[in-house]
Amino acid sequence: MKQVFSTDWKASKQPRKQRKYRYNAPLHIRQRFLAAHLSKELREKYKRRNIPVRTGDKVKVLRGGFKGHIGKIEEVDVKRTRVYITGVEITKRDGTKARRALQPSQLLITELSLGDKRRIAGKEA
Picture (cartoon, rainbow, N blue to C red):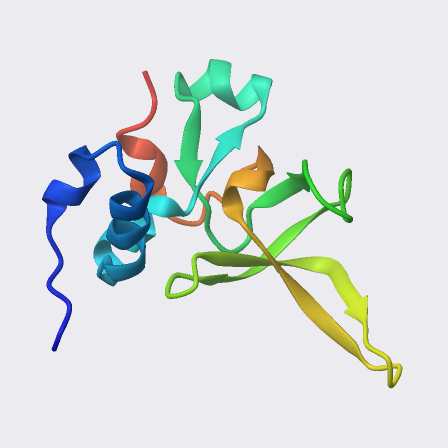
C-alpha cells in the first residue's frame, strides 16, 4: 500500500507522527528541512534567523567530529536532507577517503552564495 502524505501530521505533538511526516514528505517540502542558522552579522543584515542552504555557501560545523571546521557546501542532497562540505571526509579502513554527509541544522552559515539575486530580494529589510 502506498503511503499518503498529509500536512495534518505536522500539527501533531506525537513523535511517531512527526517522524512519519518527515519520512513521507515530498521533495518540495523536504527542501524546507534544509535550513541552517545565520551568523550574527548575517542575521542583523537580513533580519532572519535561518535560511535554506545552497551550493557555494560558506558554513561552519557546530556539532560532531568535525566541529569548528569551515568550508563551502559542495552538494545538497534534498532526498536524504543532507549536505556535503569541502574538507569533511572520513578515512575508510582500506585507506580511501569518503565524503561525510552532515545535517544542515548542525551548521552555521557564515557567508551566503549571492549568485541568485532572487534569493536575497525578498529577504532584505
